[in-house]
Length: 147
Ligand code: HEC
Ligand code: HEC
Image (cartoon, rainbow, N blue to C red; front, top):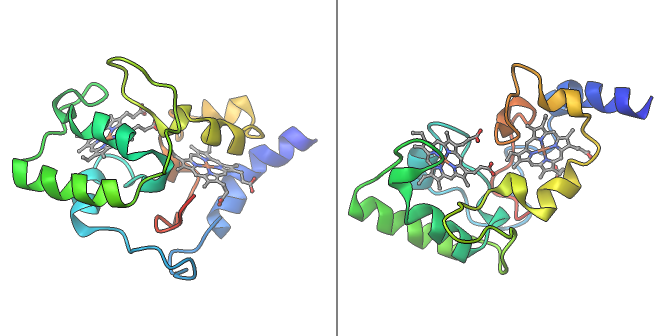
């Protein structure tokens, strides 16, 4: 029964909104326009506090080889993105990615823990496909929150 609840939860509770887009109560800076435009076109602009400065750096330093796609930006844009990410990241590493492997929020201990109750078949739904596809389940995700 618990499993079923979570299957339902993924389509219902998220429609109700886990968080609301207009919640300013935590006082964190609003999402940066450059970040949102450059890093929110293929997927949601991921909440930046889910990875450390070091982890974001690994991602922005290799945008030409970004999870199988080319997500390169010009030098000036890269500088802006780095500044924003450095100032709005987690204080310690969230993943154990080493070497050439790019860090993933979805492989962080935090993510796995938060999503441990999501039934395996939910992840496999055609409209979900990948755990990285936050917006399949989270509508109006409040990206300003410091998770
Ligand atoms: C051209 C498309 C594209 C652009 C632009 C893009 N990404 Fe991505 N990104 C992807 C793809 C594809 C994946 C892999 C998604 C998957 O595995 O389902 C990904 C995955 C990620 C992940 C890992 C998600 C996880 O699984 O936890 C992070 C973090 C990320 N991108 C950050 C960024 C940042 C920062 C930028 C802006 C500099 C950016 N992306 C721009 C296509 C893009
Ligand atoms: C298959 C659907 C699904 C996907 C995809 C998914 N989530 Fe979740 N997420 C859930 C469910 C269900 C919960 C549990 C809600 C609860 O326990 O109240 C949850 C919990 C959370 C929470 C904790 C609850 C809260 O509001 O603070 C956060 C934050 C979160 N997810 C962020 C993300 C991010 C970021 C991504 C993408 C990298 C993502 N989720 C991808 C379904 C999903």
